Image (cartoon, rainbow, N blue to C red):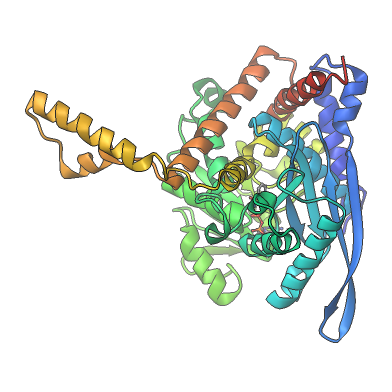
Length: 473
Ligand code: NAD
C-alpha cells in the first residue's frame, strides 16, 4: 500500500467536500457541525466458529444522522472495511437520501472479512450473528435502521438478515421492512437488483441530454454512440454497462480486480459475465484485448468513465492521466478531493456518487413502502387501468373508424405492474435530482463543480429538517 493510500481518510474527504459546499449555504455554524458529525457509532467484535477454530469478527454500524428515521444504508463485506470508511459511507447516505427526497437519514455497516474465504454456511453464520448484535443494541428495525446490500453482499445476505430479525421479533407485523434488497420471494421489490446501475444510467443520460453542458464538454447530445469504460463488473457495474449498451452506447472496456478487457466495437456485459463465471476471470475473453490491470484500463480514451468498484481509485496521482470527458461515480467515493481539483481544472465533468448511485436507496425506499403497506405495487390498479384504457381505445376506434395494430393495442392497454412503477419512479427521481443540482450550480457560478452543487442541495435540505425540529435557528 502506498503512503498516499495509507494516509487517505475517506471520512476526511467527505468532510472536505462538505466544508467546500457549506460556505454556499449560509447555515448556522453549529447546525453545520451537527449535520457533519456521525451521531452514533457501534463497533463490535463477536466470535464465530469456523471449522474447528473460533474466529473473532470485527464489524461496524454507523448512524450518521437522526434528523429523520429510520436510518438507511448498505452493509459491506470486505477486508478493507474500517471505521473511517463506514463513517464516510454513512455520511454520504445522509446526503444521498436528502438529494433524492428519500425520507431517511444515513447509516452504513460493514464486516471486516473477505467473503470469498468462507463457505455460504460460514457466511450465513457470520451474517446472522451480526444481525443479532444489531438487534441487541437496537440498531436495526423498520422504524430504526434499515440495512441494504453493498460491496460484497446481495440478496442472499439480506434474506438471512430478515429471517434472523423476524425470528427474534416474533409477531412484529412490519418485520419485512427491517432490511431492503431482499429477494422478491422474501419481501423484495422487482427492480431493486438493477436499481443502482439503472439510476446511474438515468442520471448520466439526463446530463447527456443537456445541450449547454454537452457543448461545454465538446460532446454530442445523448448517450447514443458514446464510448464507455466500466470499472467493476459487480451488481452496479454490470447493470450500468447493460443499460448503456441497451441505450445505444458502446461499452468498450470492462475492468475487474485482476485485469481488464477492451474491444473498440463494444462488449456485451452478459457474455463477459458468463465467461467470468466459467473461467473465474474476465481476462482473455475471446475477441477482446486483455489489459493487465484495472488501473491501466481506466486511463484509456473514452467519453464516459464509470468507476463502479471501490473508493479512492482515482486520486491526485493518476487523475492527470485519465482521458475521459465525463466521469460518472457509480461507486461510493471513487475520486479523492485532489482528483476533483484536477478534473475541475481540466474541464472534465464529474457526476458525483452521492446522487448518481442513489438508485439503490430510492428503490429500497419503494421496497420499504411495499413492506409496510403489505401489498405489491400495481396489484390494486393494473386491471382497472387496463379496462379503462381498453374502453377509451374502443371509443376512439369507433368514432374514427380506424383500428390500431395488435402490437399497439397491447402497448396502449397495458396497465402498470410492479417493475413498470418502480422503473418510472426511479427515472422521475433521477431526472428531478439531476435538474435540481444543475439549477443550483448554474444559479451560482462560484460553485466549482457538480459535487459541491450536490452537497449544497443536500446540506440545505438536512438543515431545513433540523430547523423544522426546532433545534437550530
Ligand atoms: P459488488 O461486490 O457486487 O461488485 C464489485 C465488483 O468490483 C466486483 O466484481 C469486484 O471484483 C470488482 N472490483 C474490486 N476491486 C476492483 C478493482 N480494483 N478494479 C476493478 N474491479 C474491481 O459491489 P456493488 O454492490 O456493485 O458495489 C460497487 C460500488 O457501488 C461500491 O462502492 C458500493 O458502495 C457502491 N454502491 C452500491 C449500491 C448497491 O445497490 N449495490 C448502491 C450504491 C452504491
